[in-house]
Image (tube, rainbow, N blue to C red; front, side, top):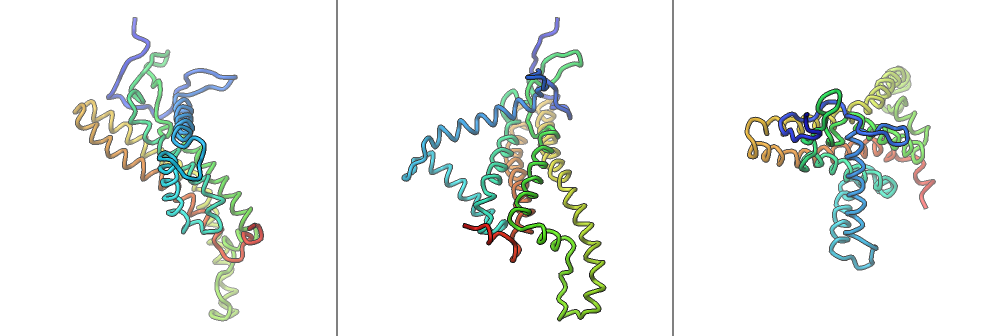
Length: 272
């Protein structure tokens, strides 16, 4: 009789997640389980480090505030001073959540503990961002946030003009040239709409590909040269995890800032 669980270091993770159990009629996959565990660790870690925020911060609160301030300083020039306060909770959440999800594959047992099912050996737990469903959900959330911030603080008129409006100066190019440029800018706007819709794919596949590929690279090297090669690859994945988390966060900030930083938007009207 085969064991229920085995430790398989060289097989890596499969492209698709595996359902572990059903909760309230909803199947819970191994990547969702990892998401819940990491989310709980984030909440618990911040609560233990900060506790009740104090006017004179302790060591834990100082570390958390310093990291948050560093990320805020990096993002503020992109989204603008008027938008950083409104967008930072979301952007900071993206960075911390994605970073820890990327690093979760380095934890012992993640992607290596297998259990037996009717379809063969499956991952008991896997890095959440090695599942395309997770990265696509993050992309949808980023797209929804972009839509909200643009419509709320820039306005539909600014959005339409940014996409399809004629940006040429009539005084510099003349009325005839300005009229001739109208269909060109309109066509460019159509291309930009396709580009915006494609962000759902580009954001999700970039993050998924890097995490999934890195996770399987570590396991493959473990089967060829145990200990040393996976350790070196693991150090590389620490760096890749930071870069990919920052890239996702940075691109989300850039998309918002490109329109909400325009002068003449509605941000001043909603400022308090």
